[in-house]
Length: 219
Image (cartoon, rainbow, N blue to C red; front, side, top):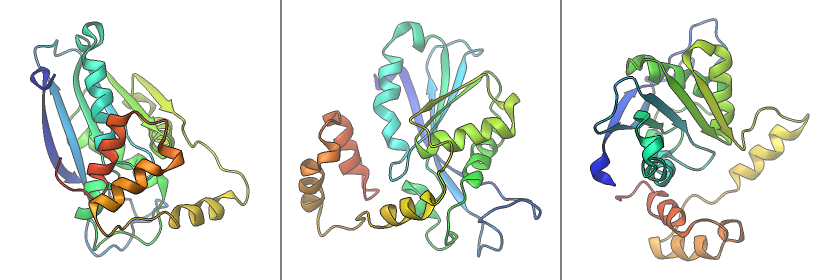
């Protein structure tokens, strides 16, 4: 499968809000950056699709790897896709490591939507573009498409978070903040994830990705 594409890890600037835009990024100590996986599919029509992908809360760009390989294993799909771009949100994955001394105290999802659009522009991506987002990333992708509908031929949202109920935001934030993010060892992390009820129905390969990439360690 690896011979069907090449993959580069790029570090690109994150979006910078205009002074009159609502944002969590005003007055940061330094500009934020994004870590991006850039896949180029071999031997395809240059008029093919570019797919841009955004992940859910607590996940990262590596979660798309198995899905990308599954897509490219289908000849009918592979022949139509020339490029895939998977983004680490500014406060997730390798992007969070790059931005550890500059992240704002609160997250503001329209900033992530602007990051999607900025990535397309920075990499000079031309149409046709399909945006695919999961959960939080689905909400960010949806908002990006609302901000600039002409940027996408189509969008696909997987379990997207598109709206909130009154009083729900603080509750969800507290639940998220309670998630454990440090472990004494890789063995402890592996044991905990393998016992987690919420992870029992995961594809074992994807669970392994979560374990290996949880601490941004080597593949």
